[in-house]
Length: 292
Ligand code: NAD
Image 1 (cartoon, rainbow, N blue to C red):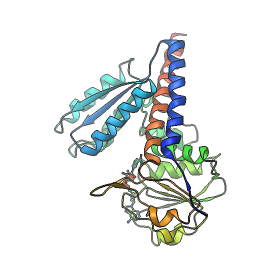
Image 2 (image 1 turned 90 degrees about the horizontal axis):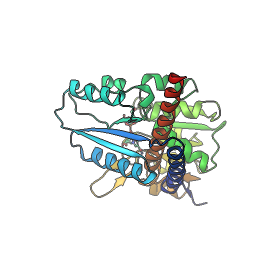
Image 3 (image 1 turned 45 degrees about the vertical axis):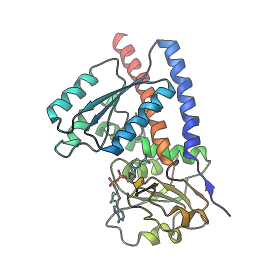
């Protein structure tokens, strides 16, 4: 049976249209337009593309966005001062620090400085803790995008064995947490660079999520015919982008698979828009409760 192609681009577009509708309704009710402030330090070409795509997506959905471009040699102090001013600016609802930051900066300290109420990437420890306890304020964009792809595609996770490859704070760890949480109810195995025989683990998986950063890491013969394959990887080869899964080898015999590009990537941006809308709502609620 040919694999079902999970079209992230199309599902992200549906999500964006819904966000656009809700942004317009919020504006009509309150006069407020959700506003995302993005910070880009340095001139990493991939980061420039990501930030541009996020700005375009905001504009399409009716959100405001402002880009703060900083030179590669920006000081920690300067960047922290910018974050503090955005934290205190009631006109800004979401703050995004594009990673990776130049090497001389302390990324952890900078991400921790973003107020949790505007932390639309959900990297702040307070938001990570809330997510782990199953009462999220914001969900991290890429893992949330994967969960949405699965739910919109009517792919059940309950009782199924999910193998997540990668344990980064941004993708692998929160991905495992979301699959494990009540409601998703998967049985989760997390693999990483020190895990022996990942191939054998994948062969027992109903769902494989690859977030490694190595082109074609997951081979076709690692995957069961019934497997659902979610490829988070974005790897730049000379002339194209490829994922972490050998798509051509897998597509013939698995049950469903996401392409790269056009799979998880657009969903990450769609979830960022939703988080920014939710951040605006949250801040309104806080203002209301401060007044009453
Ligand atoms: P990372 O480098 O922070 O983490 C990679 C993980 O892979 C690590 O936990 C490491 O243990 C594991 N790993 C490395 N080599 C391995 C090996 N040989 N065997 C098993 N595990 C190994 O990367 P990340 O930020 O988690 O991103 C992973 C990939 O996903 C990258 O290609 C990145 O570009 C992509 N990404 C895509 C999106 C999106 O929106 N689609 C978002 C974020 C990241």
